[in-house]
Image 1: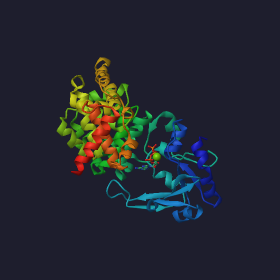
Image 2 (image 1 turned 120 degrees about the vertical axis):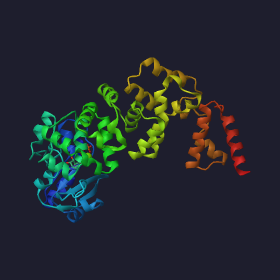
Image 3 (image 1 turned 30 degrees about the horizontal axis):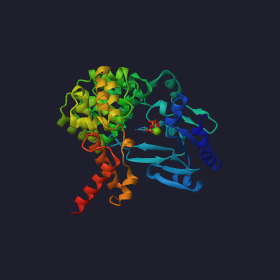
Length: 398
Ligand code: ATP
Ligand code: MG
């Protein structure tokens, strides 16, 4: 067994010794069987939350209303969730009520896809009630039970189907895909934040292009935020066929740089997707640079400096020819410094002056000076920078 499971075995043992059933479940089991890196090891048990809490010295109620308790064991935290069923989804998104049960089978039945409905016991034996192993082997994303019923219960599962397909390079089973086509309109009822998380995983998946093609063909895109369904995705799909975005920021910048939206519309679009302030800021700074990389203006040099790596990744993803990308390094080479550490002054120096307090103010002051140095407005010399800060602070006081 991979180390992540070995570390968590004592938790299963504790539950079993108390007479309960306990299994590893979900993504960790799937990823282990695919020889992929394991993220968090989730545990499911027949013990009810109060019973779980009584068995461990230290627990945190991370989601006790859904039956999840985190047990702290030798410095690590493990999410332990009581076997449960979910009933009557009146709003196509969250179950109205979860019921704790003692049966593993009931718990596996409520899971989304067969590949996610595998359980593994202490000894590493796999419980496979829905042919998840064969779907894993054949590379198929298949809903547990009737796909239409499952997507009607929770529309987010349609995004998840596309997401797992993109990430794992799996095909989507025929019936599951038909249900997707039929029920895609229900996606409008899902919270944008939850859609965004899955959509970002699609964009970053190694098989993003196929999933986006399915999403367009099956009218899924039409129900996603920001009217993205009206876009021509062909260029984006082509880029993603040969390359992959490694971060959500790179994925969004790529998507938006390739879109027909002007800069104002881009900001509106990102608000509709409820992207973070930081992502909105960075994206709106970089998209214009990506689009006009041959003509970087002087005032944009600091952006080139600060976001060089993201910029290069996006250009690479877009297949921009090397000569043009070279332009960035040509610009870069003219800059007085190439990284923060090249600054001739640091936080400790500032504190010594007694003029700047540690904390956010200091960070801001350093950034401001760095920007001035990059733009050639301040010379990168210790004395010059010290004098500058002294004058600045005495101006502040007057
Ligand atoms: P990842 O590696 O991305 O975390 P995961 O399979 O662990 O993938 P999670 O979202 O962490 O995905 O969910 C853990 C497990 O909970 C899933 O494997 C699945 O069994 C179940 N699950 C999660 N979301 C749903 C859902 N919307 N409907 C049914 N089952 C779900
Ligand atoms: Mg997970």
